[in-house]
Length: 164
Image (cartoon, rainbow, N blue to C red; front, side, top):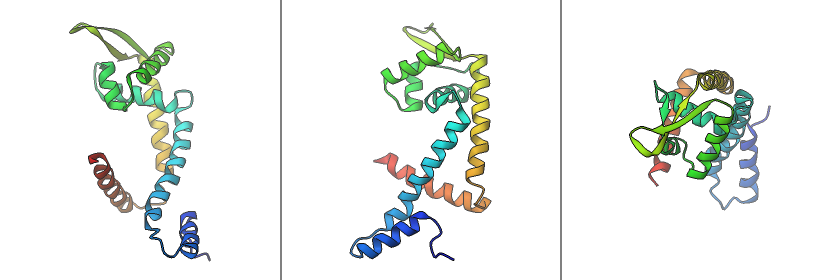
């Protein structure tokens, strides 16, 4: 039986052998996060099908906003952390697919409001259900307590990174 539980254990052992003078400990966390992220990207592609991750992000922000499932492009930019030009391209694509509509903001003559359509609601709900199924599969090797502990640790790391 191998002493290595995963590929990162092997990578760390190799670096310790070749460069015993370096503290390799960040690899134990961050290389695993990177590898897990690649698996999550694949799972998201499978769950989102034709929607794409960027489209899902916009539709999900609208869906989470609650009835009437409507936000300004600026609010969507904040929710999805993208630039104005990127958001415009995403909205154009989603509007072509009839997953959203855009109309003038009655409270701001220069602004607009983006609204989730019934088709958009079905698409984002289906994608979310598929994503959660894929993510449950990715996490099935952990106990409930391990999942809670991991979520707490990742939350602490994310909060620290967001402060900086």
